[in-house]
Amino acid sequence: MKIWHRIREQGVPQLVLFGYTLIALFPIVLILMNSFKTRKAIFNAPWEPPLADTFSMQGYYTVFERSSFQYYFLNSLIVTVVSLILIVFTGAMAAYALSEYKFPGNTFLGLYLALGIMIPIRLGTVSILRLVVSMGLVDTLTALILVYTAQGLPLTIFVLQQFMAQVPRELKEAARIDGASEYRIFGMVLPLVRPAIATVAVFVMIPIWNDLWFPLILAPGERNKTVTYGAQQFLGQFVSDWNAVLSSLTLAMIPVLILYILFSRQLIRGITSGAVK
Image (cartoon, rainbow, N blue to C red; front, side, top):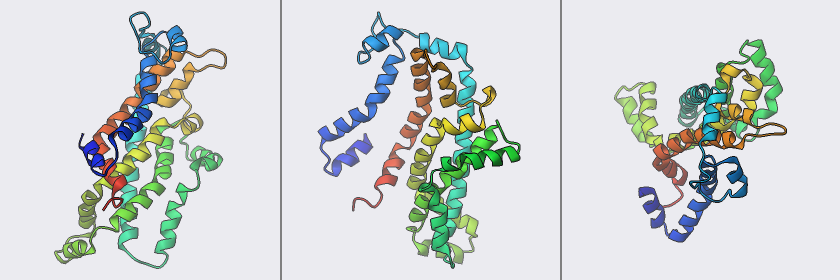
């Protein structure tokens, strides 16, 4: 509610906000409704909510009976959380160094580290696969963690560098005069850029959680399947179990929604920082 109040203070009409909310939530609500309906009702009345004669939990039963969905969920959780920790910690340190220390090639190094934003990492799939094979990490969660960390670092460094450059230099110089180490100063700067960290975490987490490409290439084994990859087993060339597909997608959305709710305030602050004076 506080977020809505802050946005309304900027003069955005309430009707416009309501319309944007409906557009954003419509796909989520549609998937959620149809996951609790029979297969016939999904195709005959996809816009109607589940009623007494169309309500069915068959999709959820199928997900947990025909697959090890709880292990898929755990694999995705491990890969996403560990990757986020490495991305935020490593990216914050690199961003702090680039924003704090001026040296020859500083600008060039910053552009080089941010180059991954413009060049999709999937273009290097063949080379990445060869590297993973040479390291003996094929069909492991470690391979996914390393690839996702490399994927998320460019955006993290680019965003955090801009925010850290706005931290008053006098504050850091005062800490140095008091004898604080560079690590202590770095720890002091992090809370000041918390909205940027939350924003980066959300934008980096969603592609990792929803990715299908690298789990299919680097970790195709049953024990290392992620949620998105595991949901594909219900999609066949000729026959698809849409009840199970919609149910698995509904379960896969839960962590993303929880993360957004927890960090929504910081996310809005990070996105709008400097936009409104």
